[in-house]
Length: 114
Image (cartoon, rainbow, N blue to C red; front, side, top):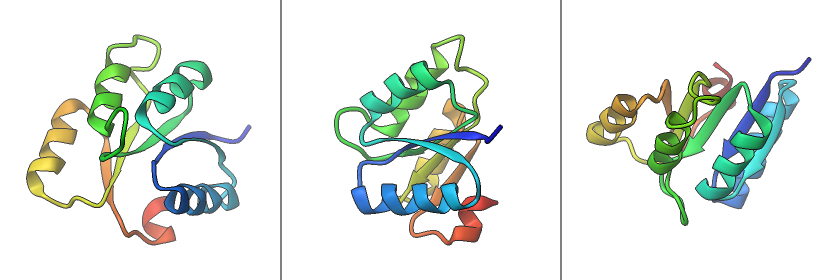
């Protein structure tokens, strides 16, 4: 069975390109265009991994991680932030909240798949 990844990203082009890279690498991908829809998808789908943009309308990535951490059924799912921000304070905040890793945009296919 394919590993299931939830991709939460508000930028359509980045969302589609990232999903395509993951699908070509044989992952099943569910996408959401904002944090609120991403949390709803996580609750419904229980993915194996969540990749989430930090800066989004409606609910940002930090809010997504905070809500997921409060849900007992989702607490063990690995969480990777996808962000254009490379500030150390942002990296630290995400890691302190429980994120497993960070990928800084722009990124290569290899960086994403590793």
